[in-house]
Structure formats: C-alpha cells, structure tokens
Amino acid sequence: MAFFLALVCILVFLATASYVQYTRWQKGKGRFGGHGRSAPLKLPPGSMGWPYLGETLQLYSQDPSVFFASKQKRYGEIFKTHLLGCPCVMLASPEAARFVLVTQAHLFKPTYPRSKERMIGPSALFFHQGDYHLRLRKLVQGALGPDALRALVPEVEAAVRSTLASWDAGHVRSTFHAMKTLSFDVGIVTIFGGRLDERRKAELRKNYSVVEKGYNSFPNSLPGTLHYKAMQARRRLHGVLCDIMRERRGQAQAAGTGLLGCLMRSRGDDGAPLLSDEQIADNVIGVLFAAQDTTASALTWIVKYLHDHPKLLEAVRAEQAAVRDATGGGRQPLAWAHTKSMALTHRVRACVLGNAKLALYYYY
Image (cartoon, rainbow, N blue to C red; front, side, top):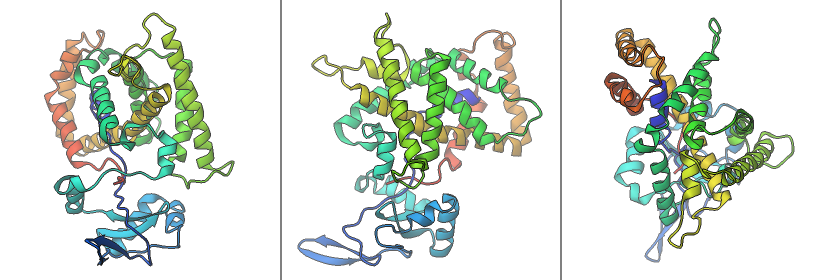
C-alpha cells in the first residue's frame, strides 16, 4: 500500500500558500486603478508589520503553524500580512480556497518568493507558465505516468522493502520522518529509474537534507546561517546531478529510464536537446522537493486513519495478504497487475488525498 501511494503522490505538484500582489503598500492599504480612476481597495483585517520586513521575523522566530494559527484565531479565516518582502492575503477557509483554485482560478497564477526559486532552481516546472510549462508538464507526466511506472514496480518494491528493513523493532520513530525517508527512496527510483549506485544516493540524500532544512529559513547570505548552508548544498546537488548526466551520456544506454532519462532524451522540433543540463537539474530537484513532503504527509495520514479504524485496517491487511499469497509469499517481485487488485487500498488512498491536509500553506 505504501509504495503505491508513493507512486501516485509523486505526481502531485503543489506549491505551498496563497499570495496576492498589490499595486502598493501603504499602512496596510492599497489601491487598484481602473479606467483612469483609482478606487480604495478594501483589505481584510490583519497586520502588515514593519516596513519592508513586514512580519517575516515573527514568522521565522517560531513554528510557522503557530504563526498562522495565531493570526487565524485573531483575525479570522482571511487575513492580510507582509512576508518575505511581499504584501499578501492568507486564505484559511475552504470557501476562499475554492474561490482561488476553482471558481476564479483564471484570475490567479502560482507565484513564489525569489528565495524559493533560487533554492529549487529558476527553471523548475512550477515557477513557469506558458509554452515552457506545457512542454515540461507533458514530459513529467509521461515519465511518471502508468506506462512508465509499470516497469518500475519491482524497483519501487525493493526500495520500500529496504527502507522497512532498516526500521529496528522496539524503537519509537516519528512516523512523518520515517515516511519522508521512504518517499525520498521511492522518488530516487522514479527519477533515476533504479540505476543509481549507493555512493550517488548518499551524496544526493546528504545535500538534499541540508537544502530541505534551509528552505523555509530566513533568506540571507550570511555564512553559517541555514539559508547560506542550503544554497551551498544546492550548488553541490546541482553538481552531482550534472555528473550523473555526464556519466550516462558516456554509457551505451545513455539516458536510461525514469524522469531523468525522459528529460535527457527530450528534443525540440529542430532535433536539438530541448533542455540544458541546468534546466534538467532544476526540474529534477523541483520534482523531488515537491513530491517528498506531500507524499510523506499522505502516508502518515494513512497510518493514522488506519490506526483509528481497526476494522478498516483489518480489511486492508486481508487484501494485502491476498496479494502476498499471489506472489508466492513475497518471494516473487510485485507486478503492476497486483497493484490493480488492491481495490480497498485504492479507496483508502483516495479518501486520504481528498480529506487530509497535506501541506501547511500554498503560494498563489
């Protein structure tokens, strides 16, 4: 069950919060211009904090969930604030989220702080719109679609088995952090097609961990800070990915399978490579980053819901036991056909994805 959810969730590319840019910032109020006249803009309640800094220091001086929860309690489901140099409106109600994401989605576009773009890579899929975005989305969907994933099922199963075997019995573990390790391993398989030696995996894991720790840190370039260390690790991560691409080009089956192979093989109308190595590296990092936390969150919620509903847990166990019997007690590799027989497991996955909160906030 865990491995299948990881495959599905890796397709989920969610940003993290609701951003609305205003034409100017003046004591928490702005104006929109229209037909040669300006009209007062009515903003929701909230605080804009200090000039330029806004409330960024308050955000980074505590857990982000505590910051947003306190604002929500004080001002309600919709409130204004000023973070990372940008005035913004935070939406915390389902109705407001539906307005932005569904009802009036054509009026909004995903927008990220510059510090986030530099950390992930400016060429990553979710930082763009238009033709570039459409071409990349088709490539990513093709690399992570059913046809491509079907061939990776045995490798994904092996990665999951290896991760589970590392969990010592009798030790208390953080479910979320354990699932992050699992989702990272599955992400490596889907990106590199199972063709990555342990040394490269260790390099990627080490540097990715540093980048992740600094992603939500206060953006500054002072040596020794989390942000500085993360940017240094980001450069090393880029170097490792470029080395892997050079090695693959020197082999008989140059690109290989997985997302990386798909991006390396992509060609434009003139037959030239569609993406540079830098663009490929940015998108590999972006996909890995976008998928890991959401996948780990979904897996964690599944564990919780199954724990809270013993009868459902027993039914899922029975379904998985039948699949295990079909593979000779687990001696044969899992196949795509086996995953199609997990009807109840699929329903549990769909229920979690439809009801659980997988991220703290999203940028728009």
